[in-house]
Length: 429
Image (cartoon, rainbow, N blue to C red; front, side, top):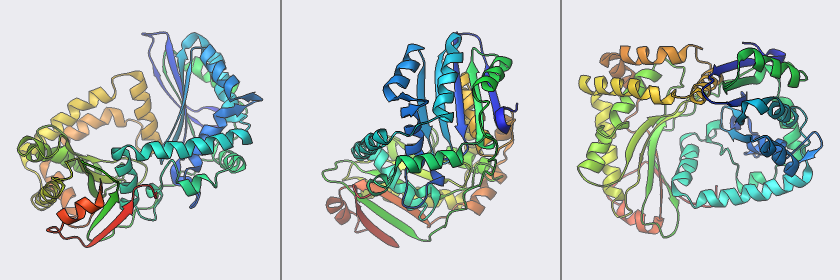
């Protein structure tokens, strides 16, 4: 369906409960942050909800709460989603408030000052979470000088450069009909939703619709280790991998099957060898990232610091054997069946189905992706999987990130060799 100013409308009608959810998704995100202003998309999106149409932050929050509605903003690299959920009988008023936030934001300077302080505090909290810290550094390690390597929440230095006026310019440039997806899920009929949009978003400007795909990332060669040095660790967070095809690439689905066979289930190779047989890590997984551009295939394990060298050596051996030898027909058959069965849980609710539809639209996949996924997975042949692995997987060109205590870990790694090794303090990025 087409909405105001050339926007796209997605819907998942369901009247089991008197609840409805409305989303507005902007087809741009942290990839659009200028160099040196990392975090701008997140900053601007949060700031617009802290003052709009003459209401201040507290008044807006009270208005949503008075309607029994929640309002959230989610920013990733490819999209920004504004999400309102509440009683369907109050939806007219809730959508009117949402339109105020998105069409008439005030970008108050005082709130920008508060938001900068809160953003610094959020970075400090992130640094206390080793798993989140590892993902942050590993993204930059995987995607050097690439939009996907930029931190969505910014850095201490870039946060200080973010201003209310900069947020206003970002929003004015990005918020146009051709770049928007309106979505609804729950107790709401399509014609009522279209009427709500016409009534409250009639002032939306047209334009946009140039949805640039991030360029393919550089692929640095060699086995590159990055130790993120954090004091007094007893456990290490290990991530390793390399860039993989984008979600829309024909090789993506066969590689998804390959990765699932390698580390997507409790009985997969990684879990069997690392946890079940040796007890080196409580968890061990391999996953394919998905997005508008090329993301990555990533292995994650978290052994004790003392067992980190043994675990890393084993993971590297398993990776090399997987890349060299491929996967067996039995592994492919099990992975396909498991993926097909698990997909039902990903689309179990109207909200789940709306989220998937929005992601599919943002990333440029066919609109019938949901209907085609299970048959397409089950149709993948073992030869296709092995051929895609041969084309796309690299045996030795890997980016490895370990969050641990460097002075304790480095001596333990002396029996392992790397083409590049760097140590970086955990609080510098």
